[in-house]
Image (cartoon, rainbow, N blue to C red; front, side, top):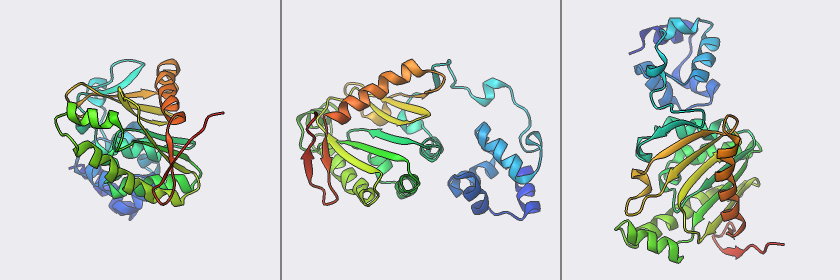
Length: 254
């Protein structure tokens, strides 16, 4: 437990919900901080400013290896061995920090679509003017059926993609949201904003949830991130637009 943080909140007469709203995070994230989890640097700075207290009073200095044990280089800021190991806070931080664009390229992405908080967050950012593109696998396409066979789950992947499409489609009431379906053979799933790119590699015979994820800073690694952004855009340009009723229409390129 972080007693110093809890006492600082009490002294400032702020609740977990107050802090979450001010920092733009989920209240569950604040509870994890109170339980002892160390926030990202930008959240520590914002909290210290909000509470009018020195950062080191809330979180004693730690060496760099303890702070960010998965930081590898200037290119891959973090690498996770499996997608399921990526904390929900990372996904929340990725989307909540977007100011210009959000892009999601997956076969199903059901782990996001089935998270009501994430869907609400995407809607909030889109209403605030963030261009949001969601690119899902066409449940009837040959590549998604083949991928399901490779993973040993048969038609389950197509069903997951169909479910994800139904859940993401709720965002289509927002003007800055567009959803398309693709029949591309994906070598990785891509989650991007104008600041970061999270790349979930696809490995033959294994589901994406068990495959590695790289977190790339687009400012620090523009050439590397541009490779994945270009891949996203190529898949997007060849995809099929989905309307509010769930009907698909082919995009004709000029």
